[in-house]
Length: 411
Image (cartoon, rainbow, N blue to C red):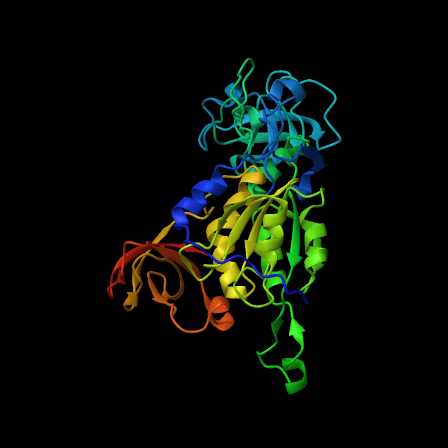
């Protein structure tokens, strides 16, 4: 418990101006690290990735079938089958050791290296095996069903993946097929989360538990930081401990510090006052609803975003401001990663002039959303019901029923 309180908010900063301030902060990206390929989904590649050319490792079969010379099948048809002699078989890890001569082939399994003399794979549907021979009923061509069509070419300096690319599951499959087992990716920014105030438990709680302080906001912010590419290395609960807060704000080891609670004008709110002792405030108070008491400071070892304590207000301030900084530090674009989705409003939503409203919505069907109420006490139930959100700009008084708007849907 402390008697220290925050300074009064002289003027609320416009949301767009607060965004400009945070976007203008220098971001020293963490160093690179090499991790196992299976752990790379969602990570950011640290350097361009060039596929290996087939000539570097031998062409590989992309299907089960028969390896042969593609041009030798020209003219094959059900009325004019061409006969090839089978010399053996090839499988991944067990290549055929010989070479093909005219009108010969080998059985081949997907992933196996084509033997010398073969440049195509004929699928089983195009041939019929008879003992040690196959009758070919359909023509193929050089490169068919092999990895000869890879975008990489000898002498090409155009990579398949540029640096700073978010890696997807599909990318990992292609890279694994190239034989990669690990990859160099951007390091994740180390985020320190400081919980400076707690909330009473009120949802479905017994009378005894309802009076017990519960941290409902910490798990929310931790999950959002992870979503945006950050690594939550430290998480401290400092309920009303101004001295502990001062120590954690001034300690090195984090790339970003997020505090939760203590940003308002309550008798025990001191987060902004303590931060101001250690470095200049960038802003305190933003014309944003919910989340208007959010603040930011430039501290000796890392920037800090000071979030309100209520989970809904903290979520609004994080999504509109702190998330951009986390994504930049992670090497990602700062804007919301999911593209906007145009929908129709089921009913009217009113907004106050001069305030940016973070409006949550719930899908009624694929093209229609119900805006959740902006007025009244913030509701955790409504926050959990939200399927996405949009911002109502300060110059707007809201939207009429059936208005078309662009929302960002949650994954």
